[in-house]
Amino acid sequence: MQSVASQTLIDIHKLNLYYGQFHALKDVTMDIPEKAITAFIGPSGCGKSTLLRTLNRMNDMIPGTRIEGKVAIGGADIYSKEVDVETLRKKVGMVFQQPNPFPKSIYDNIAYGPRLHGIRGKQKLDEIVETSLRSAALWDEVKDYLKRSALSFSGGQQQRLCIARAIAVNPDILLMDEATSALDPISTLKIEELAQELKDKYTIVMVTHNMHQAARVSNQTVFFLNGEVVEFAETEKLFSNPRDQRTEDYISGRFG
Amino acid sequence: MMTKRKEFDHGLEELNELIVEMGQRVETAIARAMDALETIDVAAAKQIISDDKTLNKIEEKISELGAMLIATQQPVAKDLRRILVAFRIASDLERMGDLAVDVAKAVLRLEGQTLIKPLIDLPRMTQVVKMMTYEAIQSFVQENVNMAYKMAKDDDLVDALYSQIIRELFSLMMENPKTISQATLLSFVGRYIERFADHATNIGESVVYLVTGTRPDLNS
Image (cartoon, rainbow over all chains, first blue to last red; front, side):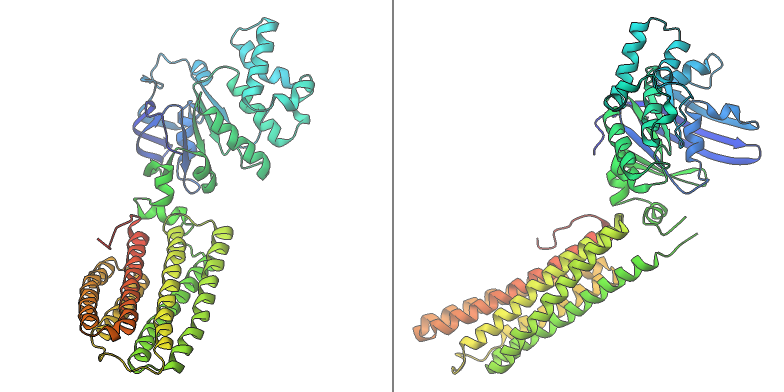
């Protein structure tokens, strides 16, 4: 599962993040390559979700958050004053732990984003809905029920719908925050396979508590501890011969 | 906070114990086989052949336990290497047991004969490979890479003794063609013991792999 892409898309440099007095991310520096899957692992409270949320500025909404350092996507600083956060979030889609479709039809869930960004033509929207659902490996299962409420589908289908909804606005990056932890093993496998397919077109960054998922799916893995990056390596290397003893202890289940 | 993985660690410990037991049995087997050869003790040789079944059983047990640990505990990194290495070492030890059996079978073929010469270098070789086996297993138990490298150096001594034995047996055969049959058999025994040392060296390589994650070539 070697990474073919080595071009850096996300450049994080000396990033420090504070929630009030709490120093949640400490001098985080890393280059995340494009069109590959990068997994963040580490014990609860290590900062992995916090870092994920800095990538589309979700932390902006948390009062008392202070950020120092640089996060650049495609060379552009996403924390500069000129950045429009809505446009940023269009480019950096996110999928959460609990599937969170809107209480609307499948069709309207997917069309929501494109409409918001000004696309109106029915034919164009139909096309986006179909392509997005196909990309999320959901089309065959739902094509006859596009008008049915998204909430009537299974958790796994809802989660793939959320991925399709994120794809519909043509992002560069997909963030997955524990996107399979609420799903059964079969649905989990489907999402993992989907991630493998999507990485040819998108850069995926995932946070997972399931180390074996990181080992199965990702190209690079980052191990965090107490807000610091302990090790960033090719997944194969990190899980077979980690450099740092703390990584070894964590992935061997002897720590945390 | 360090946590113990009780069940898993217990399983790994059991794997180690099984390997140590195999190592001790193999050491005993090769030493007894050489004793049996020196005195052409057929009963002892038969015992060695029959004891080999236990070694095979332990190897199977290691395979089963290792497979069970992989299936149920999903080990990674060094934990995974511990199990992979246990498989390899068990297979080397099983082959070493077979080589001791080959020596014992040579004893059976010598029944009723007297040796064409008193055995000197073959028992010396056996002493060396027995020590190598002990050190190989110790280096595994202690995860001691230096000990593994030091042990592997003794393989040169074994090779030198083997060449010496072959030369000596060749001259015996040339002097007296009646010795050919027995001298050939004894040269095979030399070969078995030389192979035995190669397996001990393989164990050393496994130890280096276990500790460092890299695959060295201790045979070169």
